[in-house]
Length: 251
Ligand code: MG
Image (cartoon, rainbow, N blue to C red; front, side, top):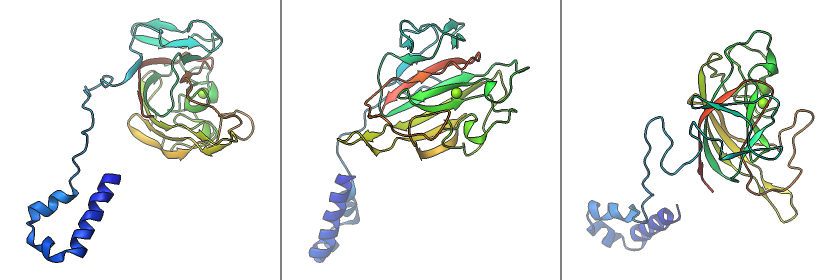
């Protein structure tokens, strides 16, 4: 942007200060003034349905080595047939690595069996950014609950723009673009976190401002300053499965 503005300023100066000279230049020559010839963006591979080459794969189908239990020790979720599944009662898991600004891809599946499970009890899990800010995972295909608690919500903060849910038992995806909050020297938030969420390729959160740490009761707030932190997946006592999880560092 800065180089573009410099180029535009140069063009304005050329047009203003030396109109005769500018007129003598060919259009082809004048057009090059606004061409930026700085470093080219790094080239990456972006194969269909696979993690891009510059991503960190957090779960590729056979290992939980990128994860640990929030309660200490190894992640105790179940891995079979290329997927991982909540091990109900074992607690949340989080990445061993910390992240700030990220692009995150997650595929998840709510249980096909819904009998006896309604509202927040049906296929509940969650993707917590920096261990604090929840993008809700829930079977919201045919399962009414409060609007800011359904799939694709920023839990108790932002209602999704649409309900793009697939039926329970089908795989779904979240693509999340997240900008971490910033804190001043007084430890108060100076730039709240922001997030964009696509659910099954559909924008459901468009650069919304996160109001603070996700809480079930009461109002969210940024009650503590923090730096980069793990991505966490919630154990909410439902057999939710995950696969193909990757992250790109945007910090
Ligand atoms: Mg949840």
